[in-house]
Image (cartoon, rainbow, N blue to C red; front, side, top):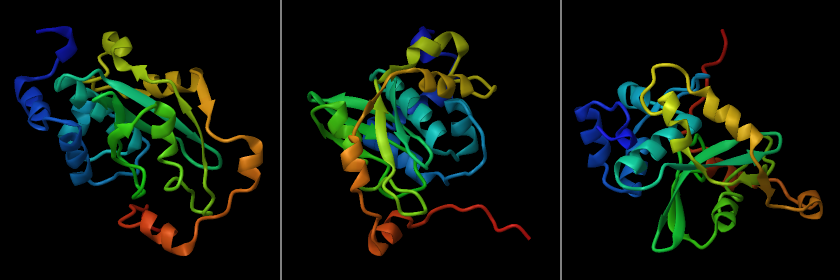
Length: 207
């Protein structure tokens, strides 16, 4: 078996290939419940558990893209007073698109219409806010080709794959906004906030 297919079982590989294209991969991720555990499951584990969060969804998206002939690329979006967001990215007809798993409506799929990764990253700005309603997106990373982690079996290991998240902290990120723009940002209005939080998963209240 070629290394690009890792240690996938034939049935697993058939499932990944049945998703066919980036939008099919996104639909599969959208069909899964969003979970709130502090886990770092491999794509194999996501397939088995049929649930994921942002980081796991991005790795799954990259693995599924790879199974369908794309390079397994992710980028990291960094936020202020908020959690970072990781997305898998792909190129079609010379333009970038993205696959994302998110607890917020506006931070998921992007059609491949963006000429640059900066354009793509900026497309997340309006829908990227925290529960204080602050627009929080600040930087984006260079794309990371996950083949660099093949020797750690990132696609199929049963161990947590925190090593990719740790690597993302070490790489260069490019600012999207200068300090003047940041100082003049407004909070998100009620309607946008409600729309962004539709079907948002929340931890049960403590008794």
